[in-house]
Length: 215
Ligand code: SAH
Image (tube, rainbow, N blue to C red):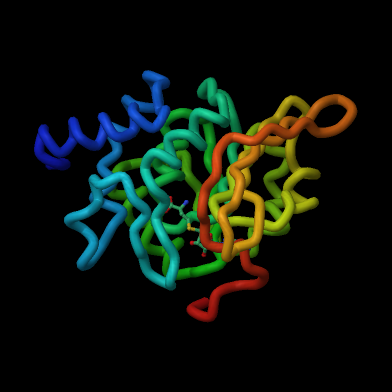
């Protein structure tokens, strides 16, 4: 595997650190997983810039520093079963796969799931299961989850996802209107309810209902 030139890699890691991605394990994994494999076409040469980029189906691969901050917010120990809603390019799922036990990642676009699976195979990431489904209903057959990460914006944390979170589990989700700045929030399930805290302002594509037309 080639990866970016050393100087590009250093700039990539510097941008992550300067935006608050400071956990050593997260940085190591982001150094090891080549973002260039998840970006195709005319934007491929910008894969190591800290910015979101267009992918197929009118979607985006998230900004690397946001991927890092969301990953840190999940406080993974390596033992968790994680659900990701919004596979997109598969980049976030690939990062999670190195820090958790098992990753289920779902997207409403079959094409994105197909392309992401090809990269997971190429990288031998055998603990990721990518599926085509409407993730606003979660993945009842694999619930409950230790962690849930939503990489598309919802107006509120979807009820079915809250219901599929284990007690002491953590969910990270951008909330707010899709055409405005949203807030990334962390939800912790307690014995008696849910605790919420705000992490940072973000901008994500919307969580949409139903399956994409390419299915
Ligand atoms: N995590 C991705 C970025 C995802 S962009 C990455 O690392 O590249 C958001 C994704 O959410 C899009 O691919 C979009 O198709 C998907 N999405 C939107 N609504 C959805 C829903 N209801 N169920 C599943 N996926 C959804």
